[in-house]
Image 1 (cartoon, rainbow, N blue to C red):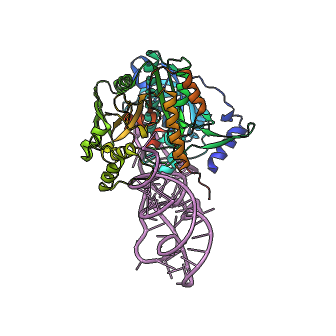
Image 2: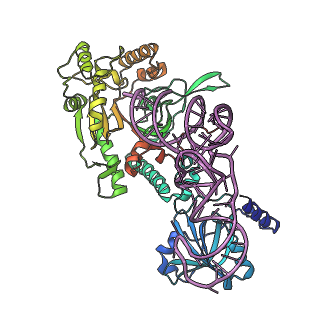
Image 3: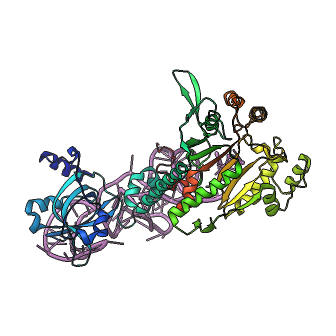
Length: 482
RNA sequence: GCGCUAUUAGCUCAGUUGGCAGAGCACCUGACUCUUAAUCAGGGUGUCCGGGGUUCGAGCCCCCGAUAACGCACCA
């Protein structure tokens, strides 16, 4: 705004350019003054933050100063500051970054405040902030200009502080149990470990196309082959797919691998980890609320196989259906769209997604996924059509995916071959052949349990956020140019 | 990708039947020595999302486009 430009020009010409300031020593946070008022009353404190409101009374002014910890009221009096300083104080704008030195006291109305003895403009705000009462509501602006959203809406800040705490506690939990955090490449020559369309980019010096990773799985298993027995990686992955309330093109997952363990150990790990987080955040309360639904995360969580779940929620018993022809017939009776590429296991999965998934509100382990939809999981010993795999569903959404990792290089090669065939038939999400990964398995991978958890979704459930955009500082947005 | 709704001042929003562009907050000027959505008096600051069209006249009607929220599809 023009008025603020003029004010800045005035400051610059009087040798007080706020943008030349490099440092300010503050000794107290805004919230500390109210929290520790008993010991701070009458003492001189130094605070710094953003001026969020002004209430001028003539020869006395009140302002609210916000910092990360909270807010504190500032009281300035002409008699104490002197004519010139008080005039300078009155020129401050809402939005300005200000450092204040003063005495902690309580006003006549009882509000704990700072009686200003000196102050310094630390940075000039050149743009007016949104309205104080209604704040910034426009979703487009809130996501594109998250900095303004964070200034205006304190609950937004709280969600991200909680996100940080959750992530820290995940690391604490795993580090305490002897896991090691590792980093693997985000730029891949073969995108593997999941069924998803990748982002493609180009490396100039090598003159090859590369892919942004769609999972961390295959590299982490290579580390297990290499003897790194307990590893995890928490990081961003990228999938070139649709966006909605629970999907963003880049999102954060954690994958954890433990040698000499199986999917049962991963179940214990998952229950333990999530219980740890809930305990750290909510104390004893295990009931989470999300989109007006309550879910009790008290352990032990319910366990059922995918076939059982399909039977319970659709009435169809795949324990009795042994051929593809029968399965296709039943699927058509239930108006499910069967594609030519679908095998028996794909149809079981279709039934599960259509009928069971949305009903799984309390956290539930779903085990025994068909082999056709589990190209990296070990077969069940007693039934080669299914795998030692589980997913946890809560609030009708998938929370994690885990299995006893397939370590048989011959079996793995066959599964890749099927994926490649699907890809050649036009399925862009099918996997690619990864010869180096097969070579790694040929050197011998110990029996291993692995699990992948969607961090953003977990944070959504723990913070009550209804959209993934509300747990990402900068959700992916289409550029606005016209 | 499809459908639906929205887009007006810095922000939150009104805008009648197609007839001079509006309010509150913010901002500017002035008053005010304990306010807290301070108060009081005065001041309207605009590419009505963009581009066409219909009309004497369009914020409003029609067409094309942009972005977003929501729903659907996709995402094992």
